[in-house]
Length: 249
Image (cartoon, rainbow, N blue to C red; front, side, top):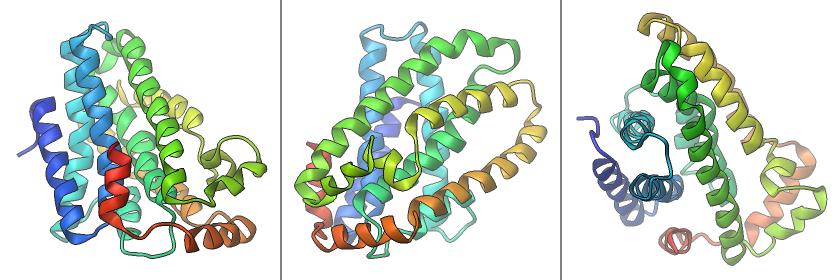
């Protein structure tokens, strides 16, 4: 059954994280990050950070259920969104950096799921009233990624070498800009809000294909950066329970 409340979302994420620790699966990396997003949204609602707390919980539950459904389908061998399958299929691979695993999840969740969830929460003419709270959840996502990149220094001591490329590591190295993704997610919401459910399904397929291509760019950033990432990976921790513990700190 889909989650109905933020507490149920957090419980579902806890189950994914526990399974990842037991199975030494990198699928737990994004789940840890997303759990913290959900906790901060819940705290923000309690502290009146959002204009409409009830609406925000509805948005976040719809948002989370898209990830939870994709994860469950993948575990059962059922089809999931192409961009989520790219993220999940990368989990057993040795080569991707911890950062790449996180970015694959963020890519699918923001570039595909966030705009859809916003449009379904506030369809049609109701969407503009959501923009303030939509921007607030984006601020939470952005702040958390900054914190995670600081934690990665404990797990991937050579990752900082890539700073010379310029700017943020994720943007400079893996062709992924969280700022652009957040802006595009609102454009997706505006495009989807007037559509019927059937029209949305058709558009989701097209959008999913585009986001899946971005996932491949994250995994294959080019020969030069890929070679540097390989060297960094040689020094990066393989201890999944420890990685999850550090990310949860």
